[in-house]
Image 1 (cartoon, chains in turn cyan, brown):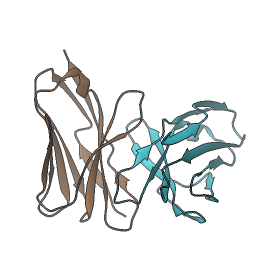
Image 2 (cartoon, rainbow over the protein chains, first blue to last red):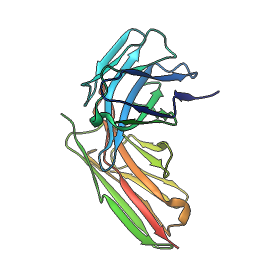
Image 3 (cartoon, chains in turn green, yellow):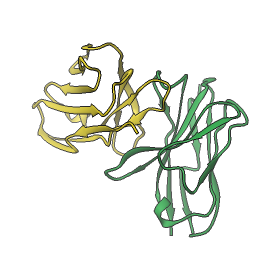
Amino acid sequence: NAGVTQTPKFQVLKTGQSMTLQCAQDMNHEYMSWYRQDPGMGLRLIHYSVGAGITDQGEVPNGYNVSRSTTEDFPLRLLSAAPSQTSVYFCASSRDTTYEQYFGPGTRLTVT
Amino acid sequence: GQQVMQIPQYQHVQEGEDFTTYCNSSTTLSNIQWYKQRPGGHPVFLIQLVKSGEVKKQKRLTFQFGEAKKNSSLHITATQTTDVGTYFCAGDSGNTPLVFGKGTRLSVIA
């Protein structure tokens, strides 16, 4: 099993550009989520999904879109990148919130 | 909404000293999880506590869940340089997404 994979590992964007961060898992987990990690702020939930076709907003959803067309994939779209979105982004999956979360290796994003 | 507070934010210890991080929730939790993130890495699950007053041990690590299920602690006995990293607690109140604390960054001086 590859677990949770994320691409790309690093990305530099200019303000206003859009892009999609990819996340995939091969553990047949229903629950998937996106977090951003900023210094001193811990892990903040952006969006999450409890199954294919179902998504919901987390703590900091503004500027991000998600979709869940399959159980395996949960891409995160930045609509118009802003410097405030410079962060490390982690995708995670689990059976549900009462089980351990498996995190991907992260994407380090810089917006200039 | 639910908040999870974690203290201290940073802790520097000499190798061999003990270390404790504390986690407090604004609401009663159905379970609490602990994660470790090494520098430059991703969070890795350590343990889950579910029962009121539960205590679990993993070698030199001791995890406790409070009687009221609103607080938890992680204690490391005789720290080693391999313990370096950030420790996060995360709790959920039942059918809600996990809420993570801001973490405690542990530095160990050899």
